[in-house]
Image 1 (cartoon, rainbow, N blue to C red):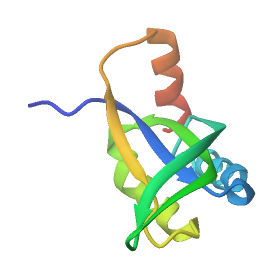
Image 2: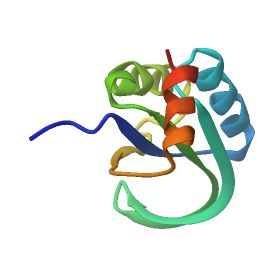
Image 3: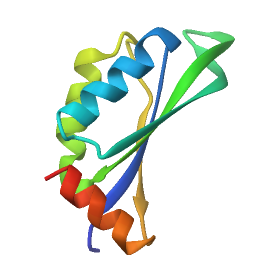
Image 4: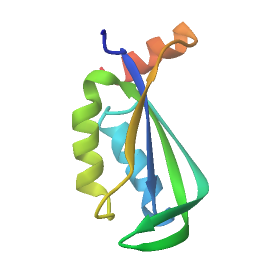
Length: 105
């Protein structure tokens, strides 16, 4: 199976670090664009169900950059176990995808 050329990566972070994380990823050309929006997350952590306000980062990048992107997030993130999941982009507006490629070159 062929790997997708582009992926969208989801990552949650505390409000105080989400913008800094987004800027660092774009500045390092690991991401072309990062959207940051507020979410309320419900999860089980160490046996306790919690509900916390967080920021969701929606990161557009190339699949080939996924490993260094994950490493960069882990290096900057304050969580012991940050959410970092990638989904393939199977299509889209070609000029936008070209721009993603150019910005992450």
